[in-house]
Amino acid sequence: MKVLRKLNFIIAIGVLSTMFYHYFIDRIDFSMNIISLFFALMLLLFGIEKVKEKDGDKKLGYTYLLVALVFFTGLIAESVEIL
Image 1 (cartoon, rainbow, N blue to C red):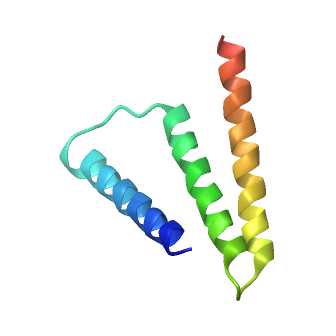
Image 2: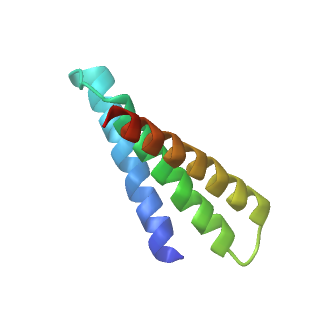
């Protein structure tokens, strides 16, 4: 569980620094698919972390996992449609 917490922290720092660079230094052209993929990955990791915790509300973790599944399904459906 410590690995997930560290990975989530690294992703959060990466997103914050990228957004800071995008808004204050120079514009970065983002693809909506890339943003959605990172958001789905973040929700998936948050969900796994919440479900694996011994204390706390596991319903929130399962909700994160469900939302991540919906995002991944949408990304896959869009990719198949393009091909």
